[in-house]
Amino acid sequence: MLAVEMKGISKHFGLVQANQDVHFCLESGEIHALLGENGAGKTTLMRILYGLYRADEGEIFINGNKMEIHSPKDAIAAGVGMVTQHFTLVPTLTVAENIVLGYTNSLTLSQKLIEQKVQAASERFGVSVNSSALVKHLSLGERQRVEILKALYRNAKILIMDEPTAVLVPQEVDILFESLLRLVKNGLSVIFISHKLNEVMTVCDRVTVLRDGKTVGTVNKNETSREKLAKMMVGRETFLDTQRSSRKTGESVYEVKDLTASGQQVVKALDNISFTINANEILGIAGVSGNGQSELTKVLTGILKPTHGSIKLEGQEISRLSPGDLTEAGLGRTPEDRHEGTIGDLTVAENLALEDLNNYTKNNILDQKKIHEDALKKIDEFQIKASPNDRLRTLSGGNMQKVVFARALSRRPKVVIASQPTRGLDVGATEYVRKRLLEERDRGAAVILISEDLDEIMALSDRIAVLYEGCIKGIVPTSEATAEKIGLLMAGVC
Image 1 (cartoon, helix red, strand yellow):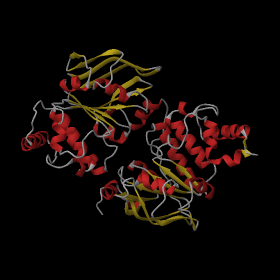
Image 2: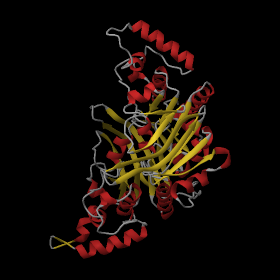
Image 3: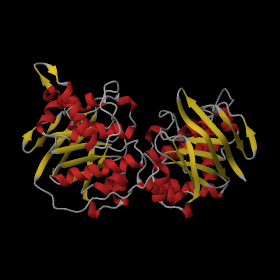
Image 4: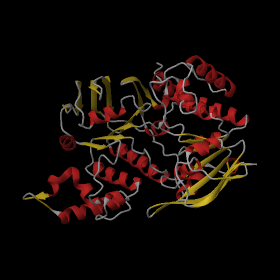
């Protein structure tokens, strides 16, 4: 029995075809992964199923019945629930209030009664929550369980999960998978959207791959591998297990001592952070989103001034330098949001020259010929699929990130600060970026890798520092690190 069947689904946004004649089937009682590069059409397809978008063409069947889904209300009535990567909870309300919000016709609510009903649902479905707790006091893993229970409370029999593990520590991922497997045994059917092939191979039964808005194929987990799935996604062979090779590090290059900085609410976003990094070394900085990574990136790259502490590059104090002066001092940086570090309406060549305009200026006039010639060299060296005169906004995310890397690394910096370098990138672009960071380390640079992807941190780093609520909870050599150990530090457990 098919829980969901989507036939011939097509969807256009202007001139962009997000889905083209897509076929997708979810069997009852299975966890079915939906894979694809960014822009492959996965989220669009699921938003059609959940009623957030209307398909231009195609049919949807739920439990064998043809459905017209015009809104999420229709989807919920048909037994479809959706848990997105960015939670839709109200932090100042309790768990029970969030779960019944918009799902009652009563003009008055008894707090005690709704808490009892939600707690009973929690026990019935085996999804552990505290119905009276305020959501703002919950961990990210606990908030996700509230989102799942909210869907189940609304009688969801089909659950769409979009990047469900993106903000979870390893222990929370394990709990999530245990919950999903238990719920599936009791009749739930799950659509699991993820970029993490290890997780797909762990928890899913079947996998459907989309590429360029079309269905590439559906395979059983037991009849495929991570490598085969990656090839289906990108259309070529990829090397998934980019790993550092051990090598002797050089002398200390970069020192951060007692670094403190305020966030947007004038509270300590960073609290007395200290670490050093050597030449020929990658220091990975791990942590769950929102624990000070953004503020650390801004301080290290000169965008935010610290309230206390020092940063030294080869013994010279640099904590008060501007971003431009930091570049001149030998620091290469890639911002956590590539869109903030580039100008979409400028050309690729102009973006490549942005941070080094003095080198292209003569008598206060830009040397356009030199900008163009240097851009051609960088495009070739960094394998950017574009021409110098292309507007940057027309590039894919991966090629846009290569432009950022080319600008930062072509000056052969002494220190590289790479913040969330593969966020939102597909398998092929991720492979390229990780190899490039290892090449920088092997060249002799000191690399600071700030990432919320623990697999990435474990694969590339020589040492791992864990950031929790603005503090360094510990620094561990990768040779001694395990996902469990780092996960506990990420959760604030020393």
